[in-house]
Image 1 (cartoon, rainbow, N blue to C red):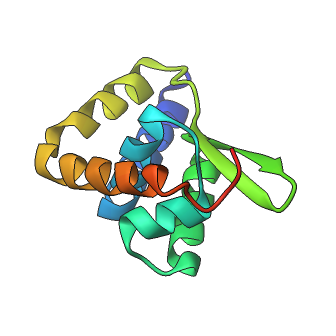
Image 2: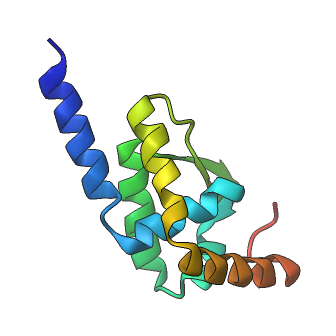
Length: 117
């Protein structure tokens, strides 16, 4: 049976999503791909903090990265399992935080952002 592997994967995903910054990143990436600089601005965290969380999310398979010259753009990876789909649905629980981040992202986009798209 593949049950031990499924449980390990579920435990890893729950750990990944147990951090508020990673949840905010996942929610922001639901709408569009973003570069580290824009995420740093919206999240109001130091660049190394954002990069550490992005690396963790990438290792977990929840996000993907695309290099473009000097910039790296991050996007939500397709949810290939029912568990991942359900966990991503859970992102909708924090309405107040999402609205605040969405407003900050809109301001960043209006001002051109930090990276060429």
